[in-house]
Length: 260
Image (tube, rainbow, N blue to C red; front, top):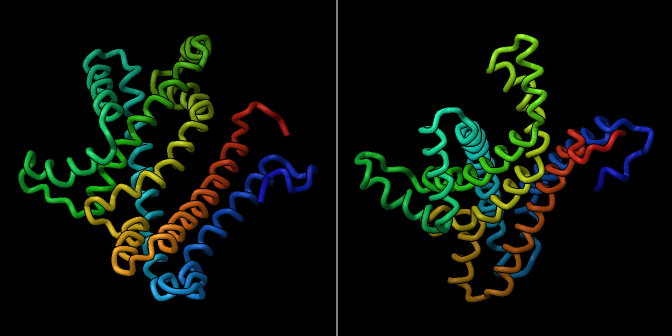
C-alpha cells in the first residue's frame, strides 16, 4: 500500500488521508486478528497465540504513550534550548547531554530501581517506569530535531511578524513553529518508529511486552528459532504499518517541498 498507487487526479490531501486511514485500519485489524492468525501455526506458537497478541498490544501502547510524552518533552526542551535565558538553555543542554550519552537500558533500570530511592514514595509500576524512561530518552532526540527546525526558519520571517505587531508568543505559535514542525517532521517520525523497537528493552524490568513474551515462551519450550522468529516477524509487521502511517503524514504536510 503506497500513496503512488492512488489515482493521480486525487489531491495530495485526499491521497494522504486515504492512505492514513487504511494504514490505521490495518494496524487495528492486525492487533485484533493476530492471536487468531498465530493460533493456526504449529507448537509452540499456536498454543501461545494470545500471549503474543497481548504482548504486541502492550508494545504498541507503550510506544504510543511514551512517544507522546517524548514529543511534549522534546518540544519544551527545544524551546528551552533556543530561549534567551541562559539557565533554561543550560538545563536543557544538560538533560540532552545526559540522555544521549547513556544507554537506554541503563536509563530504564535507573528509573525503575534507583529513582524510588532518590525520591522516597515514588514507586512506579513497571509499565509507568518504562513509559517515563522511554519518554525521557526519545524526548532528548526529539528536542534536537525540533531545535534544528526552529533554527532553519529564516530570521527575516520572525522580524517581519514582529514588525506587523505580533507578540512573541504569536510569532512562535503562528509563524515559526508551523514551519519548524514541517522541517522536523521526518526525524520526529523516524524517532517514533525506532521507539517501537527500543520498547523491547522494557522486558528488563518485567513489562510483559512482545520481547518478554517471546523470551518466556522460548525459555519454557526451548524452541528459540520458532519463538524468536515469530517475535521478529511481528515487530516487522508493526514497524511496516507504523512507517506507512508516518509516510502518509509526511506526504500530507509536503515535507519534500513538492506540490500536488
